[in-house]
Structures are given as structure tokens and as C-alpha cells.
Length: 557
Image (cartoon, rainbow, N blue to C red):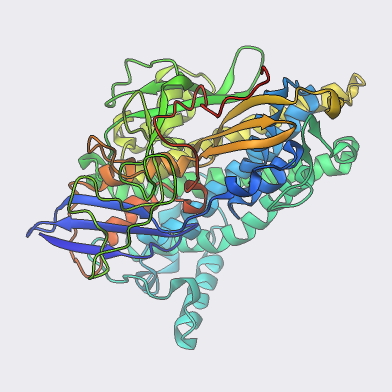
């Protein structure tokens, strides 16, 4: 067996190390994913005013700031039983929806596309042929013209001649695992460049109601502070304009590129390359109307979409048997082997700062793919038509999406139906204002709130299920805990040897060149890792996070 070490895995948020063991045929037989940076934001949150939880928890990550900010504030609201005004809920959702779209597009084009796109091959493309190729996957291809593709070619050529490759430097260009034609590579690279402008515009949409991004400041315990923006027609129009531009890009670039990838990498999709154990869960959310939600909640085991169990938060546990913590949750780093590799020879060796959350004892995958699977299996009529259309256009089956390429397709599908959903939210907000409902904050007197309380918040965010737990004593944060999407997906093995989603998805893939493990990067990047969010501290010994065990206090909560 040969060990391959990738450290750090780049084009992600945070510090991730992956070690795989391959046999003489280059097939991965074992895998270890290691979060390499201790964070411990919960320690900073202790003894703070609960109303400041969002401002501090939002610093967990520089990418997922909005998600942590909202979840932290919502957990405090849950602890105190504070109900949000309708307008505050809508505005928070508007921020979140813009973030979903922006995050998905940035992930594929700027963090993941180069695992499938060979930049050097694009230099050989024929601009006229690229134009014809683009028309195969979209009725109105985005920014598609002969002059446009010629301009992109010239820009790439100038990069190469100047020796300033920037984001295109140090790639595995020419790798035999690349399958796109020069023209197909040129099409996606042109969208890569367009997406740089796209993400700027979507950031403006987030900031209109968030105050700024990253690190918004408009979400407060009890509601939002962006009242003037809500009542300003120009601000609403600016938001709508950004979403309309986003919709054009998603429909005519992002989705079409996924269809192109699905055709080019069909063999890998059908072989299930990057497929995990098939355990998926979603907590659902984002009310569309009185009876429907954008995402459905539920749990699927072993790719059996005929059975969807209801999600039960009391079934969540966290383990530290293979993580760098002692049994009582204290930091317990054990260093590396003398040759610099992880200590993994024994079944009780610790090799990651990430703990191992489990649902009903099983390792789970969360994220856009899980949301699509659960919502589709529960016949969510908001999502189902978008999934059906993609599967029809690509001649794929639902299970085929359980693959590295499929995770990307799920993000594109999700972006498309979110673009449709957002306008309904704006309409609801306008109707409330029309009927003189301009309330955005639920008034409360902090001094009269319970001095001891506990609360939690579960949200679907771009990368998957995010949960925050807070315990309050004497109106100060006594204990705090976070389980982020990457905590689920990048978890190490548990005491029974069950692999986390990253590790399981790597098993069985074939690496053509062990000196250039592009195939490993494809699988890992397909999850959109965010390691800064994944490392957190709690009392980890046998804790059931649905009930959230804390030290006993003398007051009733």
C-alpha cells in the first residue's frame, strides 16, 4: 500500500489535510480527512452578553459569516422565547437566499471548476466551435458570441505570455483525467471570469439588508435593524435587479455548464465516483407559504429514497474517539508520526480537530445534494420540477447525482429554484408594507427575561445543516456549541470505525497518477469544505445535542 498526502488541500476555507492509502492499481483503500487548525470560538463566547452572540459567532468563518450570525441570534431568541415579526423573518431570508446563490456560484467556478477544466487545453480552442458547442446546453448561452470567446482566448494567452497565471498557476494541466474538449474548457473558463463580476453583484444584494458583507450587522435579537432599506423602493429595486441578473447567469451559464459536465463525465457519474454511504439528512426550512417550505426535512439511509424518516434532533450525538480531545472534551493534541504523516495505525489514534457527529449512530452527509434528495423523496413540488428537468436533459437517474459531479449539479439546481423563490419573498414583504405592517423588531426588556435559559437553532445553509446551541446563566453565556455542515461531512472515524462523508466518498476511486492526485481533489472539493466552521469545543462525552447537556444550575429554565 502507498500513502498519498495532500496538505494543505487548497481552494477551500480553512486547513484540511487528506491522506489516502492506495493499492498497486492506484485504487484508494483507506482515507483520513484531518482538520488541522484549532478554533475554539465558543471559549470567546463564554460570559458574554447573549445579545452579542451573533457578532462574535459570525467571526467563526470569513465565508459563512451571515449563516453563523443568524444561527447565533436565533438560538438566543429560542432560549428566550422571542417570536420574530414577519418582516424580520422575510428580510433574514432575503439575505440568506442571496448568500445561497452567491456561495454556490463561487464554489463551483472559483474553488472547484479547475478540477474539471484544463486551462492549457482551452488555449487550443476554436472560438467559432465554442460558440456552437455552447448552444447545445442552453437556448441563450450566457455572454456567448464569437467576439467574446476570442477576447477570453486573448486574455488567457496574455496570462501565459506574461508568466502571471494567477489562479491558473500550479494546476495539474494535461492530466489524463481531464475530459473536456478545448472548446468546452473555453466555455467554462469564460464563465469563470464572468462569475468574478457576478459574485460582486450578489454581495451587494446580501449587503442591502445585511448592512455589509461579510460580517453583517443588521440582525439583532428580536429582529432586524434594516427598516429604512425595507421602506426604500430603490433599495428593494436594487435587490431585485441583482437577483434578476443572478437568475440569468444561473439559467444560462451555471446550469448549462453542469449539463456539459454531466455529458463529458458521464462514465464517472454512472460509476458513482465520489459516492458516499448514501445517508443524507436535511432539517428543512424557509417557508414559501402557509403549507410549503423551500427545503423539506427528513433522513434517508443507504440511498433508499422510498423511505424518508422524520428528522429528530435528539438523535444527534458527537464523539471524540479519533479527534484531538480527551474523553471529557479537553484539548489533547498527540502530534504526527516522525515522517510527518497522521497517526492512524491504531484504531484509537487521533488525527483531526474535527469531532464526529452522528445521527442515530450513523455518519451522515448534508448539503445541497442531501436537500435535493430529501425534498425530492418527499415530493416537494417547489423543487421536483427543477430536478426532473435536469435529469431529463442529461439522461440521468436520481441516484446518479450521488457522485462528485452530482453534488455540483445539486448546487446548480438549488440555485435555479432559489432564484424563482426569492421574488415570492419580496412580494410578501411588499404586501406587508402595503398593509401598513412595517414592524421589524419584537420589543423586549432584557432585564425582565429569564436569567437562566437554553436554546438552539437549526438552519439549512449553503454547505448543509448548521446548528447552534446556547446555555445562559445569570444573563451571560455559560456554554456554547456549534455543529457546522463540514463538521458532519469531514468528520473522522468514530469508535466503530465508521467513516465520515469525505472519507467514505474517497474509498474505491482510482488515481491515475499518484504524483498528481487530481481525483482526490475532485471528490473533496465537491463537498465545498469549510474547515474554519468545522472545529468547535463542547463537553463531548456522550452528549446528546438535541437535549444539550450542561452543568446543573440552581434556577429553573
